Every structure is written in structure tokens, then in C-alpha cells.
Image (cartoon, rainbow over the protein chains, first blue to last red):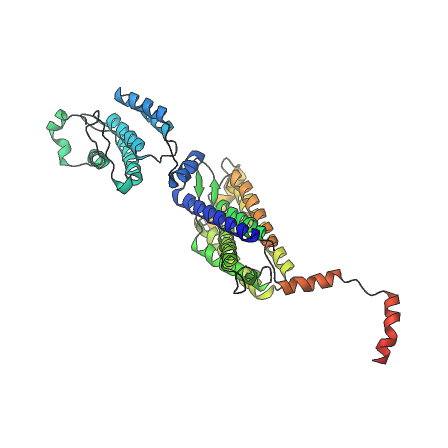
Length: 166
Length: 230
């Protein structure tokens, strides 16, 4: 009986350890926080730091985007929360947006963040109900970021100067 | 072999080797999956271990064992294979001509070992020497030669080597920390191989040979009349 229990426990442990190794090779985490966050999120036990998230929202509302991203990153150190990643992407978008031209580096970072948010969202569908935002879905934000990175004839349209930040 | 060794110790050792074998600690942390050639070499290595009676799969998976025991044994077998593949991944340079050369060297070496070595102890010694040399080549010699901030002589040497081989002999250093992790990984792997179950008959015969003492003179005198009668 004891022998059976030992073998069953060992087999379960081996399967868990093996699955964790496969996950690590697939996800390529760079920090310990990413490792622990990734593993806890797979069992549904991952929680963001709500205080840091609220700080991030406050900074975001005051157009302090660098500070907002720092707070959001602190709230979600493993990068496993879709909503926080959405706000990080939005902060990149608003900071990089320009009436004459956009900051491509910030837009690219925003696109990476919104892709992470979409990948993490259940069914890859993410809608954020925030009245302070003009775009509520990750798909809209992604399309806007991609438009900002695309070079075409419409870039020469003088009416672009009248568009407003979303 | 005890259930604890089979269910906990061996899988834990070999899976740790499988995890650390692909770890590269340079400016960033990377986990490099094993290339296809590492899987081929792992098959050869496991085959060579089996042929040399360094471990016997029938003590892990057989029809005489219960399903749970077989599942536990299969987990050990899979972890041995994964660890073997990762050991080759660890010891072989990641890219370039050196990757090809070291891979071919391992392939030829293990084909030879597969046909020639039939003894467990000799097999384990062979592996220790082979992996030790490969470790020295990669993590001591090549790392020192290609380390960032190296002196003029080393730079001239590497430039000459790359020039002679038309730029194919290129090596990307992995950082000093990777070497320490590699040493630990290799040690764990060799310890795991020593702990693998061997065949019962082989172990029993070794035990007889080693335990039995040579006959004393009195014993020979006592047995002599019986032998003469026969």
C-alpha cells in the first residue's frame, strides 16, 4: 500500500515537473516573477497587485504614461493579466501618438503589449469598460496601432492634422 | 531498486538535467531546446547504456509489473532520454561548423561505443571521460578563447582560425555562469546513470565474484580426498 502511494505521488510529481519544464521552454520566461506568474496562472491562482494597478490608472488618467507603465508592470510582473497589458498598450499608444507623426518605437511596443493582451484574454476577446477610453476593445487598439505604423499616401493628407487622439 | 528511488530520485535528477541542459545565462536568459541531432545521439546513448548493461529497461517496464509500476518506470525511461538529449545540447556548440564537428564526433564515438563496450563500469567511465573532455573543450577552452574583452593574441588566433575556415568556425560565448550550471548538470546526469537499475543476474554474479573469498589451505586439504575419490 505504501509502495503504491509512493509510486503514485512520484508519478504525479514527475508529470507536473515535466509539464513545467515544457512550459518554460515554450514560454522562455526571463525573470523569476515570470516563471512563478506563468505557473500560477496556469492553475488559475495568479493575482495582480491591485494597489499598483490603481496607481497605474491614476497616472494614466493624468497623462503620465511612463509612470503609468511602471505601475502597471509592478501590478503584473509576470505579464499574465490581459487587462493590465491592455492598459500598458494604451499608454504606449497615447504617449506615441502625434498630430503630425507617431513615435514608431512606442507604437511597436504598444503592438507587442496588445498582442500579449489578446493572447491572454479568454477566447482572445478583450473588452475594457472604461469611460475614460475611446477604444474599448483590444482589436480596435491593435488596428489603431497598426495604422499608425503603416506608411501610405494617406499620411500626406493635410486633414490628418485635425484628427484627435483616441 | 526502492520505490522512492524509482518514483522520486531518478525522475527528479534526470528532469533537472533536462531543464538545466538548455539553460544559457548570458546577457539574457535563454532555454535552448535540443536540436534534432541531440535526439539521435540520445537514442544511441540509451542504446549503448542498455547494451553495456548499465541499466536494464525490463526492470522499469515489463509485463510482470503492475500498471502503476510500469507507468512509473516509463517516466524514468522518458526522463533518461530527455536528459541524454539535453546533455548533448549542453556540450555541443549551438551553431556553426563547431556544432557540426562536435555532433559528428559524438555520433562516431557512440557508434563505436555501442558496438565495443559491454561492461557497465567501463561504459560509465567512458561516458565520464567523454563528457568531461567535451565540457572542457566547450566551457573552458572555447569560452576562454572567445570571451569578450580577450587579449590581442587570442583575437589574432580566432581571426586566423575563422579566416582559414572561411568564417565557418564561429562561436558565440555563453557566459561564465553557464559553465557552472553545465558542471552541475553533468554531475547530476552521471550520478543519475550510476543510480539506474541494472540487470538482476548481472548484479548477482558481480556480488558472487566480489564477496567470495579465495579458499584457504585447510579447506583445500580437507577437500582433497573427496576430489581424489571422484
